[in-house]
Length: 457
Image: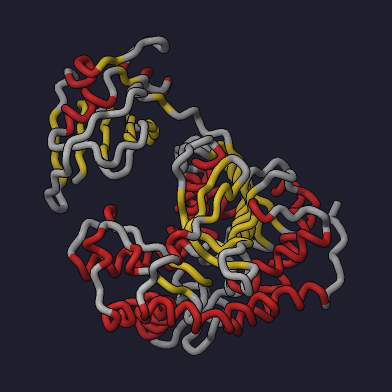
């Protein structure tokens, strides 16, 4: 259940009881701000009445300076709950499905604090590609980002110019060609590697992409080691993730810049697909469903643990149903490629990336960027699935599982979800190990056979 409070034409508050955040939307004819207000986690808090929810959890609402200006308030003013409710506001209840969990007492720390203005610099490598371009737009919208650097071998400055017209706070700059790569990476807090050849034709497997994309990821990882700050987080979106994350790790090791806590293979796309499929099958609100996906990110290595899905209603599947849904998650990318190719009638250009799953991949990558930035900002309750260096499975040095994100990247690799698997999940986990191990070994061997790229000036 979600609640939206509209405050005249200037301000709106969106409240989700499951996700403890309030978003202020302050807008005029010339500007829009989405300002996140973080509250203490209290997912069991009863929200039968949204106004009561605000009164109990946030007796004092501290507004950001842009919002205050638009409301005609002094920069030092603070609204209490009564004043906040008195702006001729009205409540709209957007109910996907009614539910009334048992009321619990809010935690002692009940003041709502406005998150500081975005202070993080994000660099997207491959920003003019099919995934990189929509990803750049989504990151431009993040209130946590102050600077967005876009890099590609061609055509990226037009993307940067286009995005610069979006009136959100992040400042955008474009960098074209290897000579400008160092400038793109300078000072970056987070680097997304989304460059490479997309999976754009039916019949092309993720392993087929390795020959081209391994070299791209190796060169970019070496550039990150040479020019990005030592503490930068690195997100690898380029496919095949199972093999190219080990490529990035080995390239960083050669440069003495490898920190396993800061290198991620982004597998969020499998998670959001699993969430969507389970929610549709069970008739549950999408925002309530959370399905962990472990293993890898290829068709045969991604394993949604449906028995560990939340809420419990989302975890009730027979082995036959679980096998069917697992196959759908694994084949979702192929379905998109085939559907786009069919609708294009064979008219796609050879270099086109539009026939791969670009939009959902960009959305998933943006979600993981946002989660990582929240971790950097000190949010102590950020968990996502990711493909990282891990000891959960002895023979697999890299493995996708749920991880806790923090100021240093991976704070904890969560292994509890691998316990108590169903018979089907246990068999599927054993079955994926050989292919995942082969992909990891292939990535490691590739770098060992290649020379190290000299640093660019």
